[in-house]
Length: 255
DNA sequence: ATGGCCCGGTATCCGGGA
Image (cartoon, protein in one colour):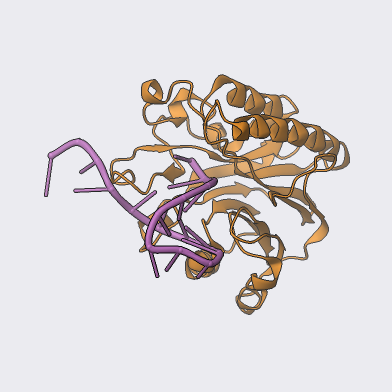
């Protein structure tokens, strides 16, 4: 089984890349973030033509999440319960017996901003909800754009980023709190290197210079951990014309 | 040569992303 996550930074712009990637990689589930479109604009027909079902929780201009799969998509859930939020950041579904949660975690902008506090509150609500989901679904994967680089290894210049949003101690603690639920960072099961990134700024030739962050993650429950075969960052789409600034992360599990 | 972006909206810049 192959699970993947990709922040596409507008599905309207990136649909050709997504379709090409789906055909080439044939994932069992692809989680998208930042579709930036209402449900009525979501390209169900184009995906169907390529052999994929999809569910979408979208809004105009901002945010928006989707799960795409060639299999039946069951038990669909949107948004965090007990957390009033206009922003569309969560969609979950059961696919081939695995609970797949697609999350677009808040960016936070700057540690002294209201958006940072919203990020921490949102993460606390996520923690509560995932706790409940784990009680109901032993095989669970939490995929998405976390907007958190968990460790200094996951940042191209830890000294320059010290204390900034995306690497701040409180955000990293929230990430570790998720790990504490019995999840693990599947990428780090296979690779301990620094300089392994999933996002590079569009500016400053950051991709060519590998000035990036590892902020897109696939966390898996204890029941899935022994089934993990590989977890890879696919830089191919980042090299295309008009790329997303994020690139896919792909986890392969034993069936 | 060390750095100069990209997206949507209804805009001819601005807010947001990270």
